[in-house]
Image 1 (spheres, rainbow, N blue to C red):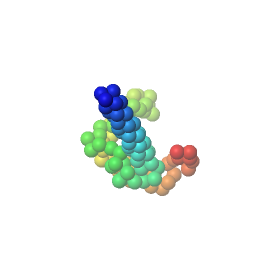
Image 2 (image 1 turned 90 degrees about the horizontal axis):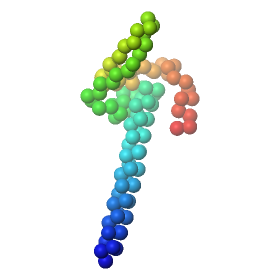
Image 3 (image 1 turned 180 degrees about the horizontal axis):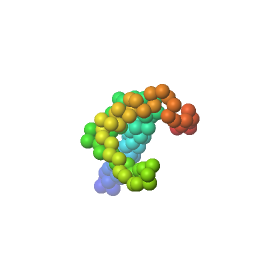
Image 4 (image 1 turned 45 degrees about the vertical axis):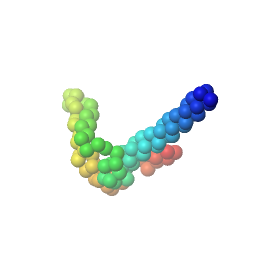
Length: 100
């Protein structure tokens, strides 16, 4: 009886772990797609779904003069980028999402 209870518990726990993993994977994929696609197809609302309001994004750049610098981008800046960067539809190749 004890072995049966342990086996049932182990199977149930494993099933929940798989379910949690699947939902985590789906949520991560959705956030990544919201982040990328909101820039390709202007959508500030999708960008809002992908970011935390306290975002402090830092990107390494090499300036035209050869100097290295770190650019800091905020949540509000990223929302603005999502709304405006590709408004004309000419910033990215048309096949960027083929096969996704």
